[in-house]
Image 1 (cartoon, rainbow over the protein chains, first blue to last red):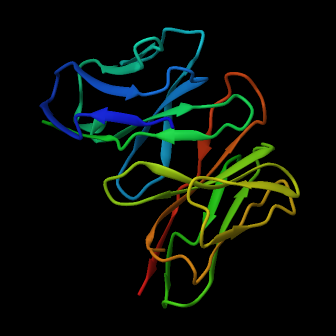
Image 2: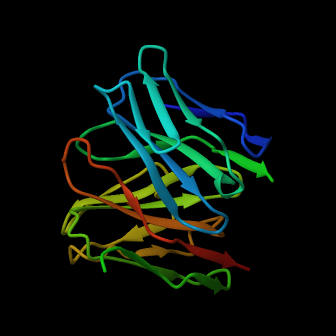
Amino acid sequence: KQEVTQIPAALSVPEGENLVLNCSFTDSAIYNLQWFRQDPGKGLTSLLLIQSSQREQTSGRLNASLDKSSGRSTLYIAASQPGDSATYLCAVYGSSNTGKLIFGQGTTLQVKP
Amino acid sequence: DGGITQSPKYLFRKEGQNVTLSCEQNLNHDAMYWYRQDPGQGLRLIYYSQIVNDFQKGDIAEGYSVSREKKESFPLTVTSAQKNPTAFYLCATKPRGTEGSEQYFGPGTRLTVT
């Protein structure tokens, strides 16, 4: 059974720092991987989708990498800002047909001014 | 204005009552999903539907029921059989079977049962 783990559970950094959020999964036979952002009491906002044939995706200050063989993905946030404070969720697609997502528990990020 | 609508945003019910959560989309996506989120945890899949008049159980379907009579709508009923119904419920949609397509989420409904 696929399990997704995110470490650390919480992270606090000063503004301007570059940081890395980690996601690991137990079964390397994933289809795609998606990173989301969740603000308190809100729904999920998609940040990046990495297809199984890709090794990384970039959007602005965000860069996500995927290493299927080692069961790992990282989300790199450059020059962090207080507005980046949120919970970041990693999720893997186990199948291309159903679209079912398996989520990690999330990393709650606080960026201090 | 395309998107996913979930209503209401907050819902309060007494124990023993069934309650139905609404999810509507105008993205023309075939697949729809219901997830549950508990404090400090990731999301868990309750039910999903890839096409009208068809749906499948997810990982935690016990105590829940769904219907998919229209492409735009996928309501979730939380029955009295669900032992711990208080949670944040999120609906999502996705184009069916499209490689590289991502899942989109609604704003969620917070259900409190006392």
